[in-house]
Length: 232
Image (tube, rainbow, N blue to C red; front, side, top):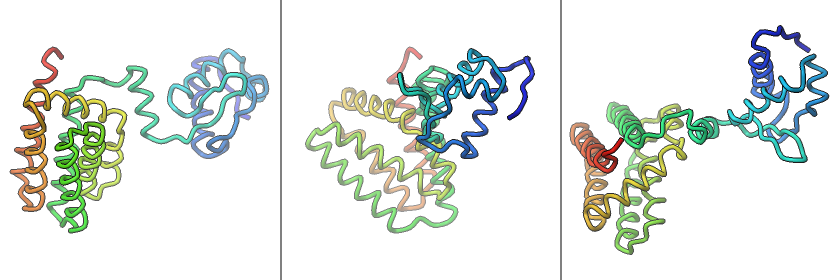
């Protein structure tokens, strides 16, 4: 077992635990050794170890269950960013989240249009649009939210860039704001007509490989959305 110096001891313990978890010493779902056992093996105090474990929990690497112990979580970027968001360590400004969504979609479609977009994905985009239209006609807001999220995730997959898509897939950061955007638009325009017009323009501009038209639609939506949060 490694020896730790007293300066930044908690940081060093955290770095060690993080490293061991990420390299698989303890598998997802596996229980860590007890605090007494682990502190003794690392030759550190239980207080310092507990602080490091609390940091692992805050970062989404582990979870502590009362009466059971600390267990390794199935770590991924989504849980990591979600935890930062929950702890208010990451910006929660809806306009910043709208900007992030706009930039990622613009980048994805720009990549897609420099190559080629599969007809299968275009067909799926059209299918989602028609399903959204049906949900809007029924005024089924929960279903519309679900389809709207799938629609924009599909747009962000067009560029075939896994990292870009993964960043967009941090749904906990974006879905709440997307839902509020829709609800505010429905209230402002007294129905779904403006939203559906926007989504139709996205589909048609992608089918036409018209980046300028797609950009205009995305930036127009961004401008409308920013007006929903005037006090930020």
